[in-house]
Image 1: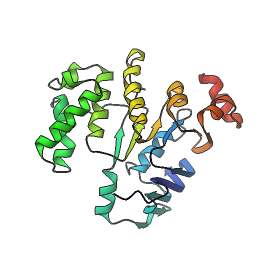
Image 2: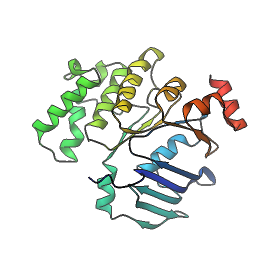
Image 3: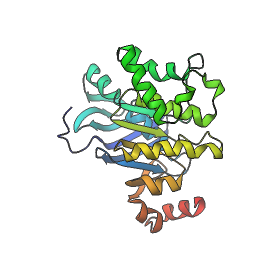
Image 4: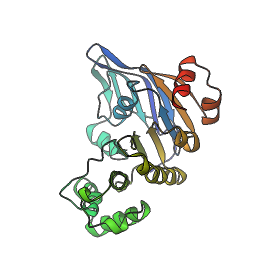
Length: 257
């Protein structure tokens, strides 16, 4: 896979409407390979919708999405103007792993089976190859000893770490995290953040919608502050947290820090 591109992911003038409600307004973002970007802001800011629009869980109303400098999708007024062929789009979408607020594990499958499922079914990989990778990933997230357990016997934090291993089992180029700790009890948050921290240190490209300001401050290369469907301000963590320019950012940080 060639790395001869400037941006692994880019959006231009992305907007999203649900009926009369415009939840994303002219979002422009360029992400370099290996960058860790944390997206913060109040509830209803459009953060999760933006993340979901990147991997087509939400169809944008207007704008362009590029993957590796190649036009992935161009839509205007809810109509597709241009796009990659469906098979090429699918190929690129498989390279975006996503971890949700809710863990969405298969309750009738063991931890190991949950992690193996997508590579076996979607990518048609060989079982022995997939199981070896799955066991290595479970080791990495600290759950190798839970391989034969069912999700109902795990804590929320453990389930979320399984969900991260499951996303990584597809060998993604980009990981999208949609408030992965917001459904967890406070004492379970640390283990999940530690796995994400370790992942960031390996050079994985990551976009994280998060309420964990300490994590964003420590791990992000850039922090975006979103409110009312726009990127109000962005910058390196030290600047954004210590000397935000926009009044909206200042007020938000004052209320959460």
